[in-house]
Image (cartoon, rainbow, N blue to C red; front, side):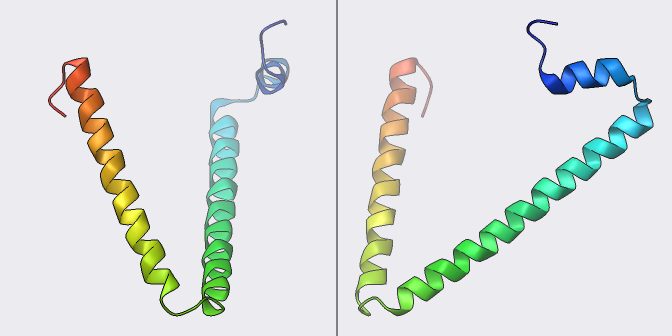
Length: 88
């Protein structure tokens, strides 16, 4: 059993039918999606609560820095694509 994950070994040992395996996978994906939504909402609330205590000029400055960083990242990706022979 070397090289197999615990999950793969468990599935091999239990031999569930395809519908059961699909249902369990759907439940796992649903739980993961729900956790992602919950985490995203918590992060939004955290940022909103934190930005309320910042000086009024700081959020626009931070947003501008993100746009500049995004623009420089795009330029770097274009440069790497051209170097690799793509169009970019």
